[in-house]
Amino acid sequence: MRIIEVTTQAHIRAFLDFPVSLYKNHHGWIRPLDNDIEAVFDKKKNKTFQHGQCIRWIVEDEAGAVVGRVAAFVNDKTTNKGNEQPTGGLGFFDCINNQEVAFLLFDTCKNWLQAKGMEAMDGPINFGNRDKWWGLLVEGFEREPNYQCNYNFPYYKEFFETYGFQVYFYQLTFGRPMMGDLDSRLQVKADVAAKNPDYSFRYISKSDNTLADKIRYVYNKAWAKRGEIPELTETQAKHIVKQMKPIMDEKLLWFAFYKDEPVAFFLSLPEVNQIFKHVNGKLNLLGKLKFVYHRWRKTNKKAFGILFGVVPEHQGKGVDGGMIMAFKKVMQEEYLRYEEYEMNWIGDFNSKMIRVAEQVTPNVVKRHATYRKLFDSQKEFKRYPIMNV
Image (cartoon, rainbow, N blue to C red; front, side, top):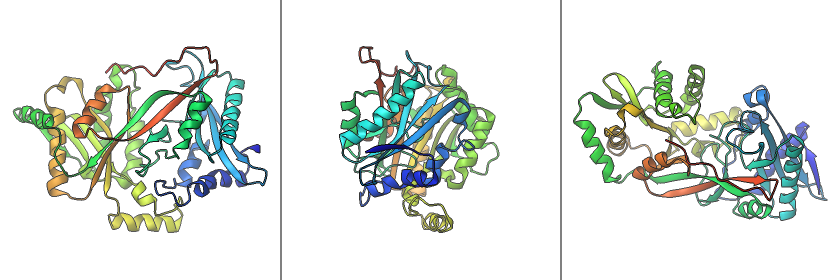
């Protein structure tokens, strides 16, 4: 076997195509868009390069066939944040069912990171934000992955744990049919909110020019003021809305208002992997035509939650229940577009969001693990701390 740094167009093509052959005919896997993967490694598109560096490799066997791939990262903004040692990362790990190949990939990442002064590595993670390509799937292999979420074979878990990785935290995905009853506590909360005529609950048009401002206002008051999550800037909020707008369904964009002030949001999106699975990783002209066709045909029957929050001044007043029950009424009685609903990427350290999700559905349908490997085996391992929210 030989490990090869990805430096040429042929290497890039091999890095992108290896999972296609690895997961061929596997029912659970959906091919990611090539452009989405390459954007991670493009210095012009990924701002993480401004304060970090990354490298990637493929492994070939004696016959010259690719049998594995991986990338390693150093992000100066997160290297020491909340860590007792400088910590790097690895991601985009794929491998045949062969421990020797897997350990060669892990060793290569470890050696590169140690040369950069790192004393631990997390994986599999993204070179960038946590909202994509983060965590190893350890439960829920029968369900298709959501957009930009990792999917992998069950044997990967044994590779990571045998090598010495330990679970740093879990990411939970809650799921349920769109139809059906919700936890009775939500209706009790909704009844409390209904007694105050100053509260209203409604979905908002995706063409509303103030949508980014509303999201930013609620997000920063509900989450960023807690000290563990950075504030969302005006530029970031507008960029997020711009990115989401082509796939937004306004009936999934719910806000609670106190008089005319937004005080909570419950934001969801159509799960576009249900469309992208028809384009074979390519958003060329044919891929775009397929995307438009399947969107027009309403092929996608799944929605997923992306953001939920209530500003502190209006917590405990039934606002969350009122908003969710209003969403339920529209989804189950007026707008019968979706059959499934998921709430993904809820960290096991975020007890507040777990409580919210469990009232929508108690069913954890997928579980991803973010692992950490301490290079000093004598050092005490500590899990990610519970959020103070």
